[in-house]
Length: 399
Image (spheres, rainbow, N blue to C red):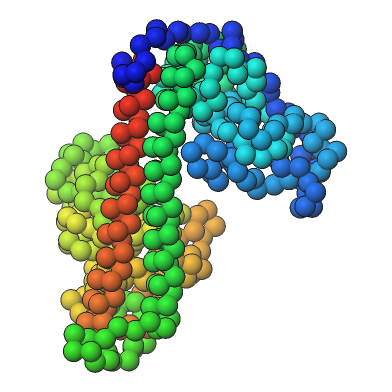
């Protein structure tokens, strides 16, 4: 077990019900009747507001309710801890505002004699507690955590000075992670802003001799690439699957580049379906249901029918086009149609107009944007490394 060397007192395990009181929130009905945009409204704290948090601290909310509505809810104060009773979250948060909580929250009270607040926040958000929730729920799929389940958990209780030391240590790690996340967000915002200026030609690049590049030409997207659809082999014929060909589905398109797919198909599966083998460097573009996600293939691959992939011509730059597609994602969506789900056709994609720089200016733009992406990716790796480090420390401490 991981501990700070200056402490040697025995840690106690104490039942939640013996040291903390839970009070559930409540919701006025119908809630829409009480939602208000007035500045004197009461903060209405919902599970969705956790998307606005850093370090499990709720500093702002998306909606307010009227005073009359708040009287039918439960008041909470700045500095209190609340616990989400949905298993989808199961996390605790510190409030930095007053407000009211709906019935998706518990507020925690009467624990000050036993726990430092910062330590308790870290403990409640550890895998140590999450494992207990699952075990106490008999291993089933749990959508809500009842007060009985929470009250039945065991909490680890060092002496208060050691709790304070632990809280300060993990808070410092959280602050470092938050700094990295803010850095990443600023880089992403910078890239977004500079892309707008590049594609509107407010920013222009010069060649290696300091000369102006040629004027951008009006073209259609289909003039810069060959567009190829995908397909799915019959899933009940085993010989079509688990081969050497990477085979992507839209949910796997999450980054600038992709290499290994979750499932693979065989040469026979490729031959017996409408899937096509795509060369390295192809832009995989999702065009059905989810429209406009894209990535560059680092290996030969195929896709299912949820794609129209762009095999880029030798006189065009695939990374330039990748960023152009992301910049004009709304145009792809606008051109989509369908009654069951939206889909954009090969024909529509081919006929999207764009202003195209020369190949050499495309390359300059691509290299510039790639350098920003490298910084974003490096920062993301730092975030992931810090989060894994913290998780490992907590697992060693809370055992």
